[in-house]
Length: 68
Ligand SMILES: [Zn+2]
Image 1: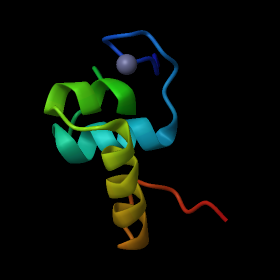
Image 2: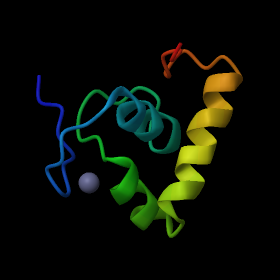
Image 3: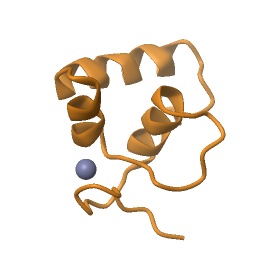
Image 4: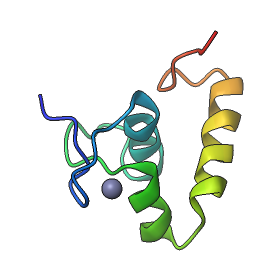
């Protein structure tokens, strides 16, 4: 399985994949984007997406693993 951003080719972390699913399509299994490219796609800053990821994680979203 290829876990690279389809746009820039950067290796993806689980947070990138989780954010892609949350923002684009929960059921998607490929064509993920990294946080940086997601930010560009939605016209927001990368920081904003990172904040959302933390928010989702704290809400207990299963797409984002707990970092202990
Ligand atoms: Zn990218």
